[in-house]
Image 1 (cartoon, rainbow, N blue to C red):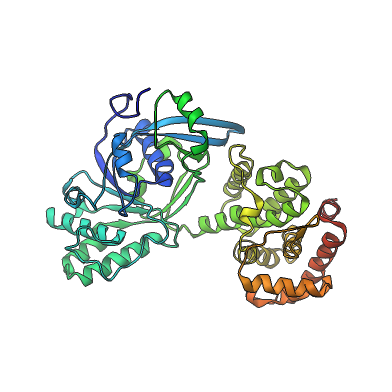
Image 2: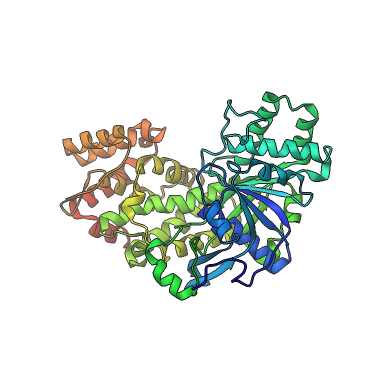
Length: 478
């Protein structure tokens, strides 16, 4: 059986226009797949040079396969469960700067280079005061990128058309702004000069982004069957879900250079990404957090099974469409489309998300993901969001730590666990509800100040504890 490489696969070669920091599963299943689609459908002609951002990584394995790998996309697509796979060929080569720094820095001299993409984990966009220009390489990703940009600045004499579009994918707020700030700090530390700083500010574009695709990664437990299906050996198979979203905040020029629309890709170009971040947190993350205590106490263990249950699934859909979406400011059709996509993602038969595994730190998650919808709903509607508050009651019951006589493996800050242990030890349900709602360490506000909220949560909590979640939810849903 052949190994996957450019001698055994019928693939194309592209002009190296993108340097990519990171060669892991996420970028290969997300950004590289989109580049592949733009190459295939819109003649983008963009080859990727993948750079290993730390001294341990996959570059040797990637080079052994000439940059090729197979991507499986599994999930709900156009209403149907679909698994499809394809060889992704946009990565032309990989570089380990810890073994060959000169090859890495030589990319700065490539006149065709236009884009920088990165995913170096949340800790990757960080300043290291010990980094120096003469290091080979610098330890931090921003240090390596600064050295590359400075080399490019020198090579092309500060030419304005040789600046780069930088599109980081790290999961931190304002990732592009933070990366640029660190690069400017290195420019000062390393005395790179006012002209270089001016070139960075005027001729390079740093985008802020929001990325969204679940990437389970390498399907180790299924590789025998996958290899048999493929008919070749691939050590870099990666799995991702069908859904994808890439929100890129930047000037119109970025949209003009990336032919995403022509390919039907779910890439949103905007001058303000905050509404999209809010949408994701409120709908996707908020729905997850709202579901966990309800579904788990109902006796369901997985997200998909929760959506398939008529009562639990109906409860969550109503919460999303009737209580979360009305608190957001994007167009209604966009919100409904995203909400339906979220439901399809939860229903994905190829992914098994255990409710208990996403229950970690549920109190702080409710505060950041659900409570803003509760407060905004009250503000806009002048009434209480009944389903989101039922979920809050379920959360309090969840922290009682018991389901059908068995202990729930609660995971949260110790202070939160101690609080609920003390409250439930006293045993009075109404007192537990009141103390929890008044706990400003949890919510940042005394929730009992909102008219009717204490009574609503207390009634639901008493029903859940005394009669069980199934009876309580069925009674609530009548």
